[in-house]
Amino acid sequence: MTDTNTIHKPVFFISDELLMPAELNRLQDYTFSMENEFRTSQVINPHNNFGSVDYEHRRSKVLFDIGDFHPVFVDRIYSYLPTIFRRLDILPFQVKNIETQITVTGDGGYFKMHNDNTHDILKDRMITFVYYFNTDPKMFSGGELRLYDTSFKNGRFIAEDNCYSVEPIQNRIIFFQSSNMHEVAKVICPSGNFRHGRFTLNGWIHK
Image (tube, rainbow, N blue to C red):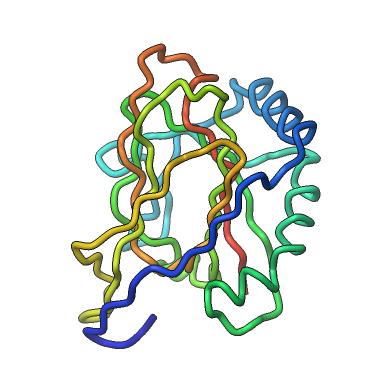
């Protein structure tokens, strides 16, 4: 996505029922048991490539250690790779790394407009994935992933007006190009309970 002044519509691939019920339950149990290990999410400073807390841009918490579920999830991603490359219209490449983390977005949380590989330290991120595993029934509203038409102007990726909204449905995963501008809509979770938030196992496929 490097053509100057050309608007690119987001290309994405959605699959439902990614995990078996027992796997999903195990992931939820592990996540809930690690509540005290979640840390406030940070954003990368464009001037120095360091992370910092910025509540005006992002409000959520993150867990970087997903335990022994990491190899399970990575293996599942690898099984999808041929389809991912084809559906995203990306030439197959040798995967260097698959980065994973768990994010919870509670009441009032959001992640404003951004993409995932603008900064130098993130440039190897090619494909972003977001897997939803909130409770069923869902105990929050909002939290949609909005993927915007994206253009490249004056050395920057720019979000255009048109967007596509993806609802956070349990056991759904979405893949899209990491350069695509996107945001997470505000979450409304009246109970304020940690377990009732918007949970994702999200990450990036590196080239």
